[in-house]
Length: 114
Image 1 (cartoon, rainbow, N blue to C red):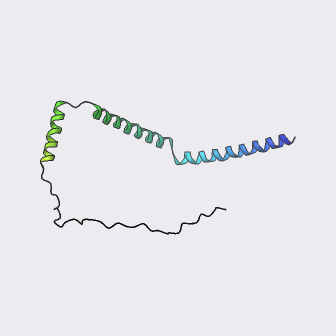
Image 2 (cartoon, rainbow, N blue to C red):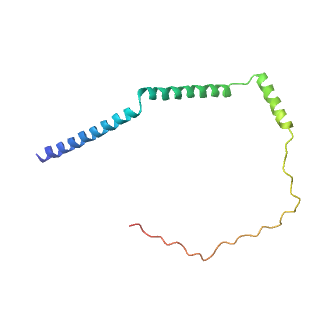
Image 3 (spheres, helix red, strand yellow):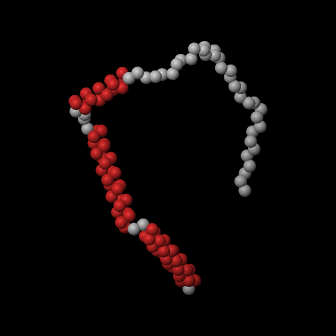
């Protein structure tokens, strides 16, 4: 009889858990509709397809015209005059003073958690 009572108590806890879980699911369903989920899945599929197309373009071999256009653009970029900052005229210091480590520093004390 004791085992039957314990088993019945466990069954009641399971049923209460199922009720709470069902209520949570119902609240989640109210917040997010099927249309919203379908829209999100559609947008994700579109983004994956777009990325796949980009990957194919990048992985594919370039035509000779594409390579020529790229080389022309590279030459145009490298021929541009860049304004660089002026180099300082002051001499650099010969040696930077070293920072000495702090000695005889007290070590932190470890305290056991209670």
